[in-house]
Amino acid sequence: MDFSSIEDVRNRIDQIDSELVKMIVQRSQCVKAAAAFKSDHSAVRAPDRVQQVIDKVSKQATEIGLPAGIIEKVYRTMIDAFIDYELRQHDELQQEKC
Image (cartoon, rainbow, N blue to C red; front, side, top):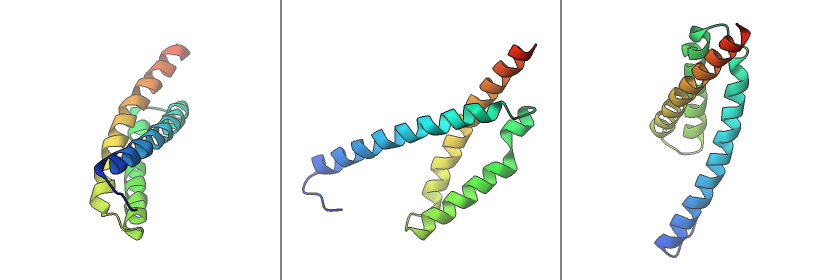
């Protein structure tokens, strides 16, 4: 990417952030839907699945030139936030069933 000023860089970052937010919203919709298929909190936490996701995105990042440590930190933070969200969704669904 060629930039002629810091403003160009910041504008591009703002555009990327806007796209990321939209994608994170889509991911949240999937997480909310997943809550209906989980039997309990352990199934929501799914540490094996978390590690699968981390391994997959770390490999993808490395293949395209991003240090795996960056994507791992980003994904662990995001996944932790989504686990909290999914636990709340799961609890709400369980309360509705009662």
